[in-house]
Length: 139
Image 1 (cartoon, rainbow, N blue to C red):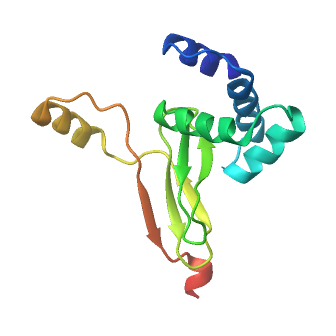
Image 2: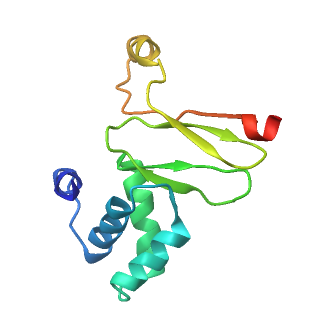
Image 3: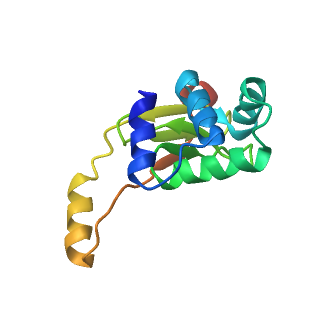
């Protein structure tokens, strides 16, 4: 799995630096939503030579490349990150307890095609989050 992302980085013209490889390793091994602070802690455990700024630049690069996707919770100013294993991942977030529910099929394929044609653009991805109150908080 990690090799797939390494290939994507190379093909996009990026070097496979220690920082990028270490952050990638953390994200792939975690297989869950993880905060930037948690990524930083684990990177420091694996390779203390990787600096804080490198971790945050790598998360930004991975977000722009569609390798990870941020999720924004009401209780935090910083996002959590999740690997995009199939390039499609969305959330419903409870505004009361911050519990989140993942879903894949957003039903936006037709809209994407229509926007590409109408606006003469090539859409490479999208983010979708719904906010509401979960059944546990609603009772």
